[in-house]
Image 1 (cartoon, rainbow, N blue to C red):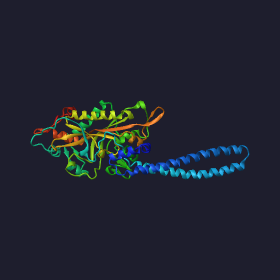
Image 2 (cartoon, rainbow, N blue to C red):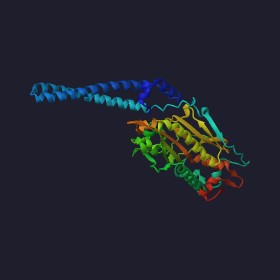
Image 3 (cartoon, one colour):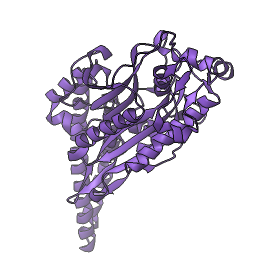
Image 4 (cartoon, rainbow, N blue to C red):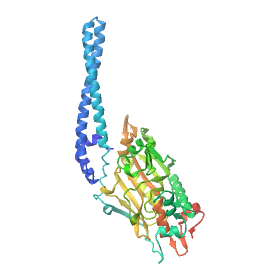
Amino acid sequence: MLQIQTLREQKDLVLAGLKKKNFARLEIVDEVLAIDEKRRQTQFELDNNLSEAKQIAKSIGELMKTGKAAEAEQLKAKTTELKETNKALEEKLSQCEEEQKQLMLLMPNLPHNSVPFGKTPEENEVVLSHGEIPILYNEAVPHWELTSRYDIIDFELGNKITGAGFPVYKGKGARLQRALINFFLDEALKEGYLEIQPPILVNEDSGYGTGQLPDKEGQMYHMQVDNLYCIPTAEVPITNLYRDVVLNEQDFPIRNVGYTPCFRREAGSYGAHVRGLNRLHQFDKVEIVQLSLPENSYETLEKMSIYVQGLLQKLELPYRVLRLCGGDMSFASALTYDMEVYSAAQQRWLEVSSVSNFESFQSNRLKLRYRKEGKTVLAHTLNGSALALPRIVAALLENNQTADGILLPKVLHPYLGFDKIA
């Protein structure tokens, strides 16, 4: 959530940032400021009344000591009147605060200066490319045919049990999943991340804390009886570990990593681009989360990007890094890098990771602060996929297929116990 002080002092900057994010309801800024002015005036009146009531109470005490009971009774009547007025002012203040909060929850984070203008993924900026596009043998096929040929992932069986977008991994397919999860976790531990195994159901406060609510409410699976949500990513429970927490400056940086299944309704998704593993309702992902001092967060973001690229290099996958344009960024992000791997059989790029800096947007919702020079200051939060499995698996299967089977990268051999799917 944006800070009200930013809206008050830098309204033009806020409006420019919201326009870059292609936020349609710019009038909310003026609505918030109008409510804020009413809130501040109400607070001023209430503070003055409370001060006057305190002074009257003191005067009553002095009058009673000197035997001036009649005068004291007159002041007591004034106190009663003030109490009624203050009760109305407190209700008005509470209403203003709630109205202001609900409107501010609708506003996305402001983009970093380096974020390019644009509305669609085609307008994202390619930062770098790495590796060579593989040339496949003539009979190469997309991964959904390979998974059927080698009986390693069954989409129809998943459809029978649950529905489309819930595949069943079998045999070497299941072992490949487990190998990738363990590989990603082990690499993160080497990098100094603390492993967390969080719940995969979260409450409403957690969803609001990281910005999934109210923005992505329709994309989350909701258990209405208990008012719990299936997590769309481990970012949500891991970042919420620090909700309502005050840290010390020396605690930073804080690095957490966690593996979880992830759940996304993906409402409105259809077409050839969602076939097979390209887009699922349930998938596995290893997520890295960092808490940073504000002055270090963009250096941290670059290091996280380099770390994710290192994983892709070890998996011997060609990839590119994109800086997302304003219209393609998430609600809460200030700057996002997407990593895409090339899927040779589909002849298209597949997103496998997003690494984002949220600056203080999530921290303000979470009330995540740290002590600095006698004050409490909002920390910065960052996260990234390291990595999401489905499209990694799709690219590994497609890019490494041969007439004799699918050759898997050497770095996974110790985890798999085999080097080829045949």
